[in-house]
Every structure is written in structure tokens, then in C-alpha cells.
Image (tube, rainbow, N blue to C red; front, side):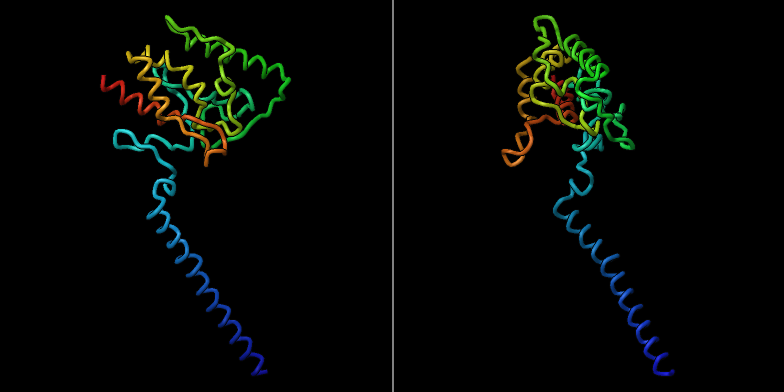
Length: 210
């Protein structure tokens, strides 16, 4: 009986010591080590890929924003279009899609209305947008509703409006778009894109210099 109690106590003691050691290693030391490496070598990504302007954080390069006036480049629609995101205001508490079918009359009407608005908003004196030139991402939302980027084609379509409303030359705004166009990852993954927030920050700085 005494040997049995002694063995049980010994096993319990060993188990508690192992629990304590593993708790310290995996619950304290490992997280601190990973955090230290991330902050030392991947600071921006570890902190949410923050974008700063005027000395303060204004967003993340991974999350789209809405609410830009027509002086600025517009992002993809926030919701109700295309893959049909249910995130109508780019709120981080909600991300997803309603997945209307491609032959949905509701979807077709929404796309037609969105295209008409893009044509109207971006047609300025001396430059008229052809409806056939409106790219898909100008009238469809992403599956998450949080896409931070647009295609170079959609950015270029907005150049004349942005230039006119900011008193800038078309050439200067075209160069801005070109400078902020990112190619495919590793040269073959994904599509070229333009981060809207980063582009609009650069646009604001350029307009302030004039």
C-alpha cells in the first residue's frame, strides 16, 4: 500500500513538474521569442501592415476603405455587387459574400447601375468613358468585401477625373498610378494591382505640392 501511494505521489509530482515546464516553454518563452523575431525582422507585417500619413496610422495595406470623395481614386464597390459581398461599409466585423448567381436579375441590374455611375463620374470635359472600357472590378465587389486594391485598368480609367478635380496634369496622375502599380507576386501569382489607400495618400501629397 505504501509503495502504491509513493508511486502515485511520484507520478503526480513528475506530471506537475512537466506541466510547469511545458507551460513556461510554450506559454511564455516561445510566444516571446516569436514576438521578438517578428518585431525585429517583420515589424510592419507583425503590426498589421499599417499605412501611415501625417505621422499617424490611417489604415492597413491589407484592408480596403470606403468614403473617398470624387477627388480621389475609388475602390471596388463595398457590397451588393459581383460576388456580392454582404459587407456594405467595409466593416471589419463582417466579411463574406451573398453569392448571387451569374444569371441573377438582381445582380445584372446592380452591375448595370454601377457601370452607368462609373461612366458618369469619370467622364469629364474632353474625356468620355466608353462603357465597354469599364473593367469588372469597377462594378463588382470582392468575395470578402475588404479588397484594398483595384486593377491598373480601373485606376487608369479614373485618371482624367482625378486630374481635373485636383488641378493636376493628366500626365502627372498617370505617372502616380504607374509608380503605385504592383506586378504579379513572384512574377506569376495573381494579377497586377494598385493599392487604393497608398495611391490616394500619394495623390494628396502631390496635390499639396501644387
